[in-house]
Image (cartoon, rainbow, N blue to C red; front, side):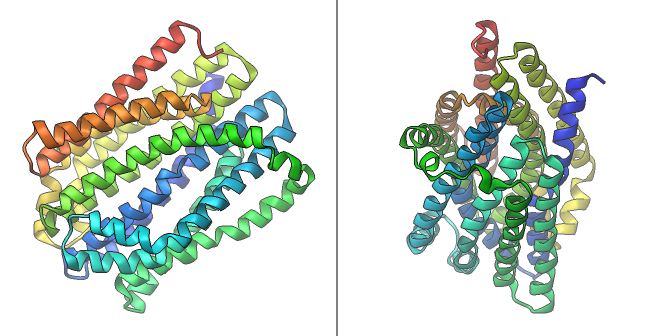
Length: 433
């Protein structure tokens, strides 16, 4: 195994282990409500989770841009710029958090109104969201902290933080739902408490890394550099917003086919999120190593990082496909004892496995382009892919859950093709160094 492979695995493996605990919280959420005797609870968690994810993923660029900018600053050896970037991104995140919190009632009510779910599902989703939306500032804080740690390649520390927060969430899930009989409300409160536990880690890193040493108000409020970050962040916001619009549309459309279909799709999406968060370990390795090589203007290291992370992403996707193809029936029965939900989930599993194949390329190349900070390319490709998804679902394929899954697959195929083409053109024309 060569040096770049070792570097990739040293960064990615701890991140994969920690990242998987994030969607495992959703897995446990479904497990604890999946045995409460009604598909309504699974559907409510599905709707509530996609709405809160819509908010968080729309601003998911916060962690990615933190990683990209920190790794490039670290690669160039400019530590003043590194910490100024960290403080500026924190300021932007604080402002976004404030706007979301003061607009929470409008956001929740409008989001639920747009969802094509039953009134009972919506009522339970509202209970969940009324608590969960308060965790937004803590999650942004966590994302900045993790992005900073990945950027300076302290991935073991990042792993410990993410695993701690999510294991705490899982423990509280079982305690509130089964011991205190709090149902949907218990799931939401468990997440809220766990997310705010990250504050203790923020204080610890702030002290050990002596972050106050580089604190300079004039740098933080330097309009020119803030403007640059806002432009990059706006491109990533558009990209993330369209991505989550496609996910929200998928969930809402599935809900229109009934509570059973909504519950089945929610379970399958949980499998998808476990896979995507695991693959993100190699995407984050791409962000860090590609960003570092690009900052050093080292073409050899840049190409090596791109191809090594792509290779390992492919290996991991094969492992996931094998596990689900051979064990899905058993896993689905663990999540829920509702026979109709089990049947529906197994029926559409083949489309999820197909998405695993094509989604791998898209997730890997997302990491590459974030490391390069080529956000306009990502934005434009996401716009085109989103249009294809809606056009196929609305105009070309049959209006049923299978047509919905096929359209979702096409969305990932288009993204993978266009991102691959952009990467090939960039390498051929030597645009990256």
